[in-house]
Image (cartoon, rainbow, N blue to C red; front, side, top):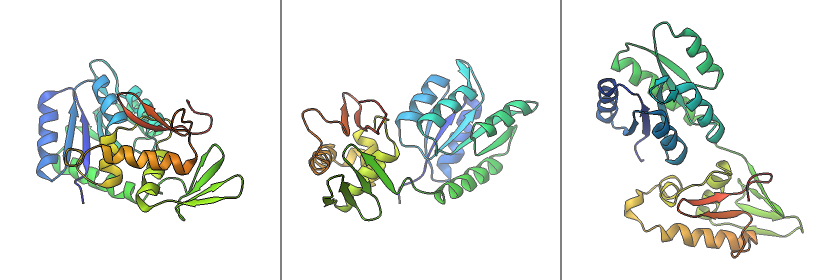
Length: 235
């Protein structure tokens, strides 16, 4: 099983380094950011399993970052890092959907314990929708079956079904080929040619009756990857 990946958004270099080193020692993969803009970009565009988020950042409010993440990735676990005396921010963070908080100064053991607990809870959450709608029909996840409005049906392979489900769970968000390789194929992106993803997307479009010249369901986002266009979304 691939190591869990944690994003640390903390502007203090010494604190950030201590957190990053402790997480890596425990076997986590770690991404890090010292400013809000970079933290938001990584949270929204890279496959991470948990965000550790400082609320005081030099280029903006960590709560605003949390709001943005909740819109684009509503089930992504987030633990906020706050200083003593920031009770209102902690309360607001929890209201905005943070999974937990840790008060500075904190012990590394406490932070690791809370991170592990949040990741265990997140693994027990419902894994996306059981049905994904698209123009002209819907995808029945459990049966790996496309059901069309004209009454016809088409089966998907296991990999095609996993890819479509992941795209549907992240509808209207551009997903890179590398993220799809890691999340659907469970392979390091560097070890496999991204052409593998392109071929699967081509087969899915054919089965979805999605015009490859002017697709309406699985869109190609230039320079980024693919996006499932949900009803009412862009595209």
